[in-house]
Amino acid sequence: MVQSPSFHSRTARTEGSAAPGSKANMDLARRQRSNGRKEAPGDEKLLVGSNVQVNGMINDQLFLAFMKQLGAVRANDEDLILELMTQGGDADTAKRMALEIRVFQRYSGKSAYVVGKTAVMSAGVTIFSAFECADRFLSPDTTLLIHERHIEKTITLQGPIKSCRQVIREELAALETAERVEREDFEHFVRGSGMSAEDLFERAKENCYLTAQEALDLRLIARIID
Image (cartoon, rainbow, N blue to C red):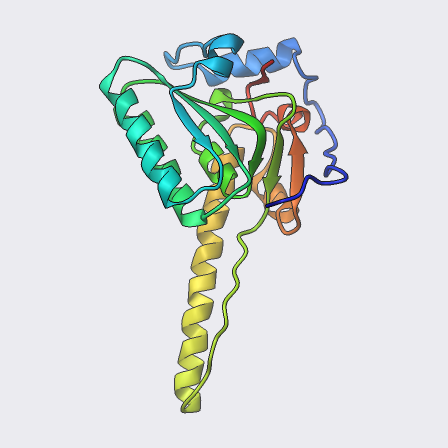
C-alpha cells in the first residue's frame, strides 16, 4: 500500500492560468463540452449517484465486477458515472478497464464521468485518464499519484554469448515498448489540460503527488465536488 506523502509535489501555476472556480475555468469547461456534449450532472448526483464503483486494489476480481456493472449501464438509459478510489494494482488490468471505458464512450451514445475520491494512485490514474478532463471530478481530499511503471525482473544469462546478447536485445525491446505505451497513457492524461506530456513524464520519474486543488489548477479536472 502506498503511504500518504508527508508533502506534496507542489506545482507552480502556469503563466496565464486561471484561479480555481474563476470565470476562465468555467469557460474552459464549457469549451471542452462543445460539439453537442451535454453538461455534467450536479455535485450531488456525481457524489452519490455512481452506477459503477472501482474501489480497492485493481486485480482480476475487481475487473470482473467492473465489467458486470458496465454491462448494466449499457443496458439502461443512464450515463456512466464511475466512482474511483484505489491505491493501485495491476497495470495491465487497469489498461484493459480504460480500454472498455473508451469503447463505451465511442459506441454507447452516452456520456461518461469519473469521480475520484480520497486516493487515485498508480494504476488508478490509467483508468482516470480514460475520461476527458471535462468529465473528471475529484473530492476535496483526493490525492493523485503518478509515476513510471515499476518492473522487477531477474534476467538469467546462460549459454553462448550470441544467444545471451539476443536475450538482452529482446528484454530491451520489451522495455522500449512499455515506455512508449506509458508515454501514450501520459498523453491521454494531460490532453486538454494546462500540462504537457513532457512535463508529466519528467515529474513521473519520481513519485508525483497532486492534490485535488493542484489538479484543478492544471485543468486536469473539471471541478472539485463537495
